[in-house]
Image 1 (cartoon, one colour):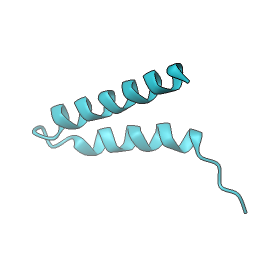
Image 2: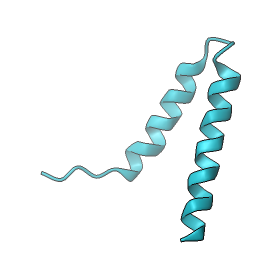
Image 3: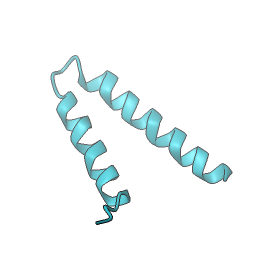
Image 4: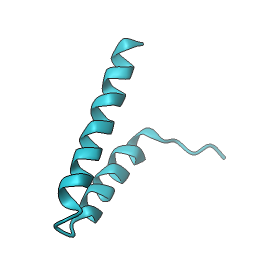
Length: 47
């Protein structure tokens, strides 16, 4: 359980840092896209 929390915290801090750094440059869409790619691999839709 501790490992999942560490991974969650790491990803959250990574994306937050990317958003803060890229927003003033006008490149925050790049950070949003990378977040989409990471989340797309983890989600499975059930029909």
